[in-house]
Image 1 (cartoon, rainbow, N blue to C red):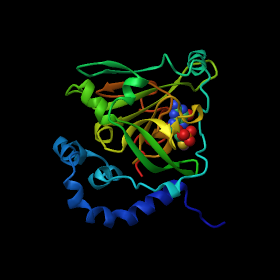
Image 2 (cartoon, helix red, strand yellow):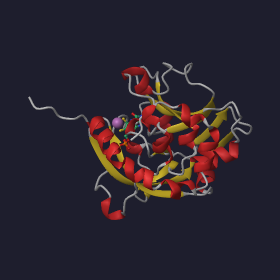
Image 3 (cartoon, rainbow, N blue to C red):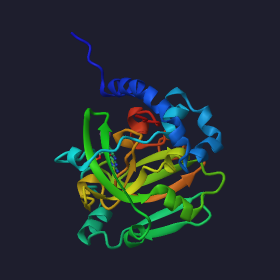
Length: 257
Ligand SMILES: Nc1nc2c(c(=O)[nH]1)N[C@H]1C(S)=C(S)[C@@H](COP(=O)(O)O)O[C@H]1N2
Ligand SMILES: [Mo]
């Protein structure tokens, strides 16, 4: 039987090939306002090999309208099975708010109108799911760094945890969750998206708000956001591995591509 690379092996190899390009872009990237912030933390240097400094500062490739997939499929939860979420769907998410709390100076609770009044970013990117499919979509929303600027993380804050509305067990327990570190949280392409391909985000893709963290794989792109929590460590949350699939299936916490 001939050996076929898995999706992840394939992606790793593509990345290795792109290494030279990333290096060549080093000077230009150094001029951006967010890159010096990464260097200043010093923490990036202690990361493991596949989280190497070079891969953390690069931008994910952006595409054109002509590249958009005709249909951006749904994966995982397509319609959260909880009375609370179904009630929100029924009234068009009019009462939905996003809570941002934890290790911050100024916790907030934001309505969709407030989020839409903040600076916005639109990006056309490719989503890669470990299950072996990809799709290109246009996402619009609020850069996460704008929200961090608003809530002012305390010096002890190290990770951003995304709490979702969808229960992953039939009995209504174990909601989906994910987490990223502050380097990814401040990345300019890390946004909280409320629109897909110019339309209000559909329920199947995470309405009313979902994370896009473009340098990582599909399972990090938390849908159905209810609460964002700044923490120092995530080993006391749920199964302790920093995310639903990390807890139940041993997926890597850092899913860089
Ligand atoms: N809340 C929540 N977020 C989630 C999931 C999920 O089941 N629930 N599935 C993840 C996986 S594995 C993928 S590939 C993407 C799918 O996003 P899509 O439904 O927009 O294609 O969402 C991710 N985020
Ligand atoms: Mo996925």
